Image (cartoon, rainbow, N blue to C red):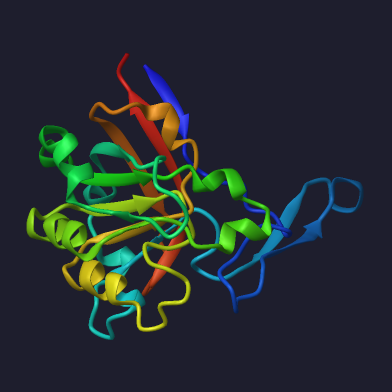
Length: 214
């Protein structure tokens, strides 16, 4: 069994969505003064590798704490879209190349290689995203969720968030800011994406891992 960590480290100088403030990690107790170490974490609920709940964009949407834990574990497949240039769109041809694996999976993750820009200004650039037809197919086939190795499932310039409304409105979850997706190959694997369980969670950081049986 091989475990692939798909999660970025949370730290103070990390990328965050434009318009939000970065996290702060404040020392609350120290070994020298208190005999133990404890840290105050102050951050937005959609910091780092995280999950969006339907409640992120829907006033009556489900919160993460209301889901059964089984929502966050399942079969998954990575769609390789490294060949797309800036501003590219993942269309149904990418799904059709791996349709058998897609149809077997609970989660579909899109690997554009954009995580290589993590920590640079390029990370906020014109990253590839799935098009409307792809998202509608995943909604219609009742996936548990979709994921990206970029900061959003739609361009940052898209202020009305139509992709979020489509996916989250169906009851699915969205996983953003993944990394290391290229280590998972193109076969079906087990994905665990467990969010922090806080009351009325519109989103939460996760520790995402891919589990390969061989």
